[in-house]
Image 1 (cartoon, rainbow, N blue to C red):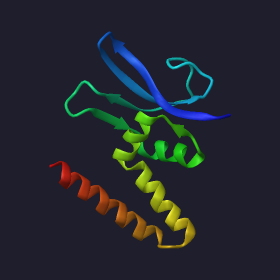
Image 2 (cartoon, one colour):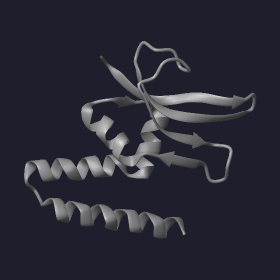
Image 3 (cartoon, helix red, strand yellow):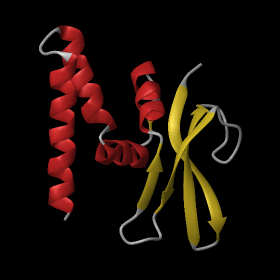
Image 4 (cartoon, rainbow, N blue to C red):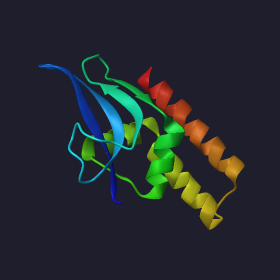
Length: 115
């Protein structure tokens, strides 16, 4: 079964907020889904994202394809950075502890950039 990570629309007209869900490719936009992994509210400034990081990483590693918007959300939250580092660990480029240290340094650098 091919899966996608995509947004499911909620809210009233002109005030949408979204759930980030794992769904079958053939399922309708607001229809049946496999798992809810977070929420995205573009109405706040800056946009609010609440994400189950480990579940999102797990689905990305399994091969679920995100839509363009969800890909940018996951990238901003660090899911793709963590995937990249885990690939380096699998190839033997560095150890698990070093990968975790690099991820923490990336996250701290990102927080300092936002502040």
